[in-house]
Length: 195
Length: 174
Image (cartoon, rainbow over all chains, first blue to last red; front, side):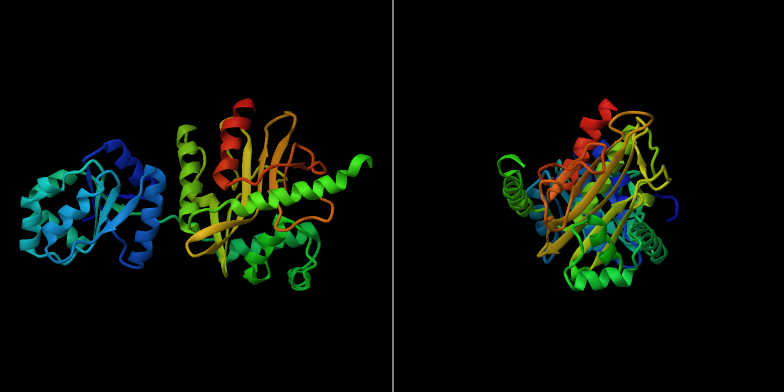
């Protein structure tokens, strides 16, 4: 389970774009904060593919539910969730009925490693659809660290030759001049309430 | 000063304010994804010189989100800048206010410093968070054509619209 590529959403999206229509993928979700990771992944994928991306979570009669959800619309990208607990029978039914799920828009199976095992063991034809397109979702690391925030605050203090405390005081008295840097400064100080 | 120039500037500033209020952006998550994807695509087309994942940063405070790349002040080349194929370097800071899954512009600063001895040596697109007392000299939204003390009014732009001007208008001429 360690031989798959780790890719940030952009790279996965590019692979999806290159593979073209009627393609299936597996993205292995992180063990923690999976829901947030899913929302971020969908935003990134939509930006890369320039199509809507939606979650499809089959319920009840799974085959009919999935066929209906994937059948309208067919040109967006669909991320299938909720299959981690699928048993042998469910995977087998999905495998047998796979032709009914064919669509031009990409289908991405959002699975845990355990879910991937189920796919591989009980749905060989779907597994063949996926082929080598199995990825671990990498992270972006875009959130500014505390050290980075402090460095920027120091840069601002040095440039304007005033302290952060003075900036807050001026903001509270509505006396800050109009300037994007002061907005940044207040956000870095977690005083967005003063903007 | 001939013919009410300050009054005309105030009226123009009011128009810029109304334009700004008409710009409705998607969720901050989507805006960040769009900016990152835009830069990654341009970077891929130009030889992957920049580590976009490392230099693009985000900070949240209350209902504000600050999206930034590069240093707060462009004084010299750094490894935090985004470098275009011509050698120009880009840095920016964009602040948005998010409500009900949509974002409004609060302020931004995009600076593109051109390489070598080119003139103008930089372009800076600024959106201030509030009007200035003298909008003739500092419109709410303006562009600096290579001079810090010259601010020419410019319509408020969505972040991708500014990047379009950077990559498809200024860069080809650099």
